[in-house]
Length: 95
Image (cartoon, rainbow, N blue to C red):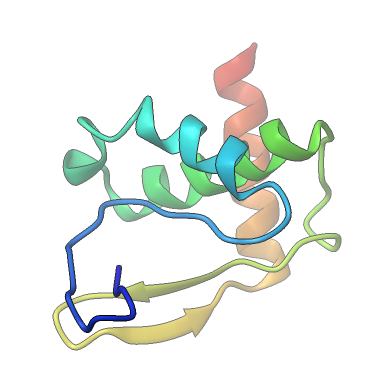
């Protein structure tokens, strides 16, 4: 994060928006294990966080997911089919 004075601090997970505090609290409970997460686990944690904060379930067509990955920081948006795959994996984990 960056503050107005120009100081910067590393972070492992953050949120912004109307329910920022609820999302930040959700992520803080998982902050110790986040560095060991695979890409898929990270995406699923973000989706679960969003669902938990908003109190609803999603379909792949209802949300957009994007990630910055790798040393070079390549940004990419996930396709609807990829999001559906993550949603199905989340549902399987909850069963």
